[in-house]
Length: 165
Image 1 (cartoon, one colour):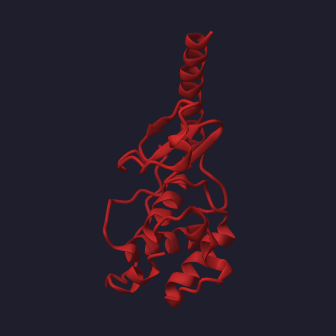
Image 2 (image 1 turned 45 degrees about the horizontal axis):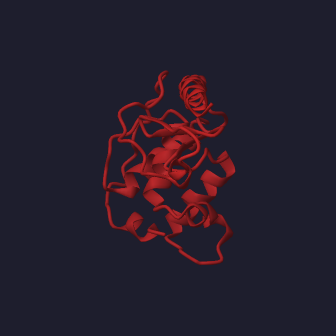
Image 3 (image 1 turned 90 degrees about the vertical axis):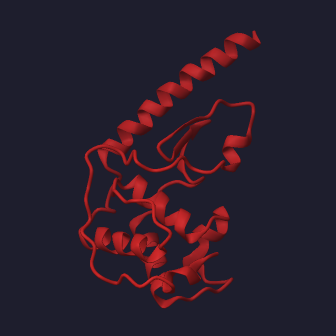
């Protein structure tokens, strides 16, 4: 897990959090996750999100609840990486970098961000989102986008099943 990159960048200034009514569409597509490698089910990928076999993910993971996001920010702030630290389970579980995990959570909660090599900027956006209560619930715009991807998935699935019969 790449928590050590959190201390390498210097911007500790407060960053204004912008909440979009639309899903965050400016992000690069997620890397291929284990669910996208299953040839049995169609995969719909758009704007950093993936929908396949009833699963809506970003960077191969779902949204984390607010308490886990708080814990992750605390781990990064302390710059502690311990194999048995239960607060860091998500990045270990999904075998992703901390940066990928942070980007996924920002996407799910509709917080706009520019692609950046600096984890600290993403952590500041999460911290500001936590202080403004943005992680209490997934925004309606993200749920609507999930429904759109699900509908597209079901069309592809129906087409796949038609060809097999």
